[in-house]
Length: 157
Image (cartoon, rainbow, N blue to C red; front, side, top):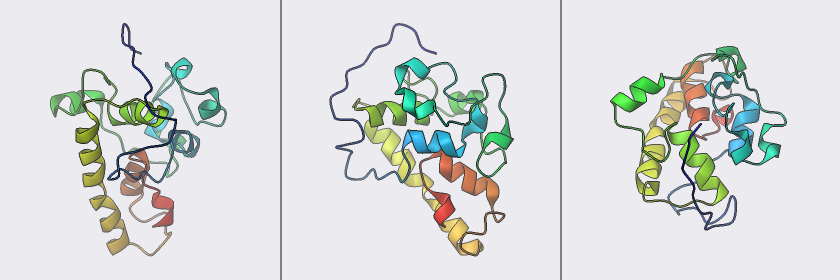
């Protein structure tokens, strides 16, 4: 996935998050629910705890929207992320890679930017609440799936 990059874990796993950052799902929970069409994280399992992958819905061959909790595609290609400047050099796979490493205990100069992006994504939860009956998983499935990709538990909305 990434060569010649190392980092230090300066915080305990899952602890001491920035006070503005309150994800509702852990990386393990996200992977078990089904995110990113199962394609994400298939080539870097050694970097993270084995327990994250025991029940993960992954597909090392292709992006499969049926692996997603809501069964729909809610992803944009990595090329779009790069074009929009959303990729930081140390996390070439984007936000979820940053979040996994942050959860593990890494802190970096990109934390403030990524937390700001995470907070901005919450607007989609507002749209689901406004337009859907609570827990109607067929209402705004793509938006609900995208929220899962950002560690918001849209199953509760």
